[in-house]
Image 1 (tube, rainbow, N blue to C red):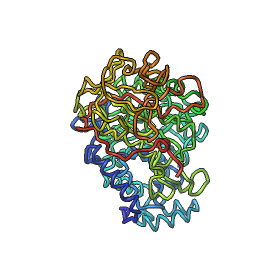
Image 2 (cartoon, helix red, strand yellow; image 1 turned 135 degrees about the vertical axis):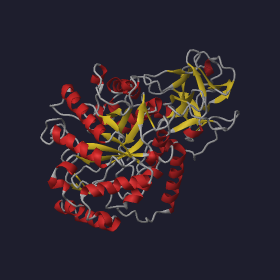
Image 3 (cartoon, rainbow, N blue to C red; image 1 turned 30 degrees about the vertical axis):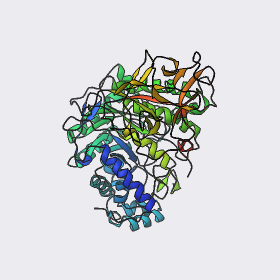
Image 4 (cartoon, rainbow, N blue to C red; image 1 turned 90 degrees about the vertical axis):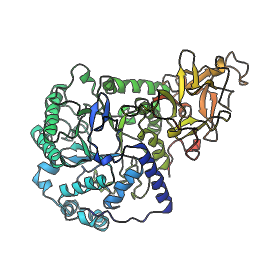
Length: 571
């Protein structure tokens, strides 16, 4: 077994991780590592039939060294502990087929693998941080990583990422589709069978993803059905405990073909589908177009291509999404608010790309920095606290089997900050705070009335441009009639054109975040026209449904988040 070791951390990191661990324990059924998963319609559930929301992070182990990234920087147990402390209950752990099917790879020890690639500095780091894995065969080192995650109550989904170890993906790398140079179907099924058998007795290995990002000129739906169904049956036969997760075509962006012909499997309640969604899946459209129009159009496209399966009673796992955590990528910044709103609205299971702060070797570059990484290049702390904080509300299940704790109500979710609208009292202005402390709202679209479910005479009222919104009466005038006014349906607005009380002239006022980064105000609606230079994110609020119990007083549980920090910042 690989050493877990003791790690010296700064007081700031230790405090941050303690807060994250408390968050993790509050959000998830425990222990995560002891659960056997199945499906109930669109939900992933445990043995009792209660929902288990997959809130995962990707951890690659499929590149040329064939060892989970980061073991040259930190002890494996410390990394696994940090995964749990950051609120993730699951890791999507990648592996290459040749790890278990090709003797020229599978016979190597960790030391031999790194020596053949001249990764002397990384090997020295592994000797210092994880000496117990150096002389292990690569597959045994992989088992040690899986074991360490289990010791930290983190579930594992094994993802067959490629056949030949290396960076993924392009259309001509030989790993893209059945029949490509490195993707022989019989070898692939053999690899799946060996991995499923190997981990059949490991209770926290809860799923197997059959293949990452099918793609390339050979791809077609007929071969997809032929081989993916064969792979699914092989995994289930070898390990009927695990969820079998099927990916789509076109870099896992397309499952639309299933609308006319569903899979035919001999087993039930153990299959799910996965989809990927990045900003670059649509080139530079987010940066080049009107954000509201782009969000509406691309969100509808993702629904048509994959998320429609939820309505057909299938779980859909958003197994890769993420952003450049340096904060300067306009395409990513605009995409994230829209993607987070969709993920919250549908209460999706997901896996963030990605955990690693760096790679041993990627595309010929040593120690390459991973700007999408949750951890920094040294693997010692979060790369960007703001980015991590705003994904944490998505870790919390909002509804599903076992979570009928309250009658359905509406949550006012602010995707750019990851916070929700709540109150200190009936008389004080509303503020952004922890979504676990949300108010229970009721929204009546025909009347435009947003009222507190448990205080129905108190509705949300605008007071004018730049002024805080409040709870009050009356609830049937212009200042209390709220509409979703933009293409994205993320602008929540009142029309003040006939009201003399607004003090701001005529026009639409939208919910917004005040200059203090905490108060909820109304300001003239931005970006409703086709203006690609306009940034609407502070005015994007998603009305999300929940059946979770509601905090007694709706008190703030987090420090204020300044508006200047709502976008992920360079650190």
